[in-house]
Length: 358
Image 1 (cartoon, helix red, strand yellow):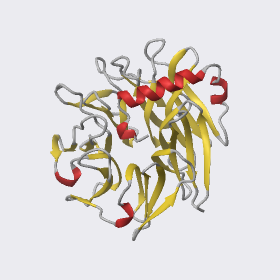
Image 2 (cartoon, rainbow, N blue to C red):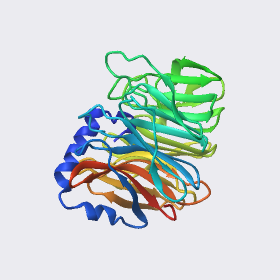
Image 3 (cartoon, helix red, strand yellow):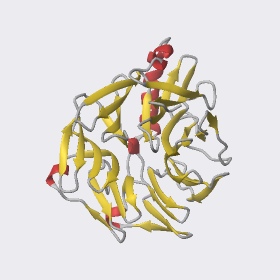
């Protein structure tokens, strides 16, 4: 499932199907395989709310954030939620009051500078090391306009993306200094991005859904990346690790695919399972983790492609949804964020860990 397309309707249908199958299976979820385990499970909202997490960022070994919402199903307006890792435990954080919707994406240049965007609430949040505040809010109109990504470099250099998906997008906005400016042209429809520096940003974009374009920012302008290898793909995720190590997750029709850029050419890599691939993160040792959803039975997987070219698949929950991974800096440990159905409620906002994390 494309993260940029996870609107209230698509999230709600997936969570409803998960609830039908949960029964007494919750203990099996906690018994994760091959190093993955649940380290935090928190319920928000009403007793039957589908609370969940959509993004995780880790600016340091003892500093991480997961953010999402109290009800991802769309059954209620919901409110944004956040949990913070202090090196010992995950704890619920306080966000500004009177906000609705859920957090879709976050970016953390440091532990004292964290940014987040609301999926359908039309606002940007900023954490200054002490307090979360609303940094930008658009005037509400008729149909909610979605925000899908954020890439921040400092408190005065932030890119916010609202690519079109299941809902109309707010477009691309750039905070430079104290001024927010809307971006037009090839960079105007970006859904998600990954940056090597403020002058070297790679992104998934489109003028309309689905996302079939890769664009690059060179410090001056955005331009479309044109190559036959990328033709016919619908892009879901991107992570730029170096100038010679960039990864894309994509779907070619119903078939999942990774694409790797080595600095000279894009090379397709077949995914050996029938899953929808999404968010990507480095594994800290030359390979990548990618989220995998099997929508027919709502199976959530952590897929691993090693630096040696070997695939492995790790089930995080038979009815779960996994939204995001984050490599813990200086380690090979990884956080994952998502949703886990619960037998006596809609579901819980859940954090998984792999390796020494948690």
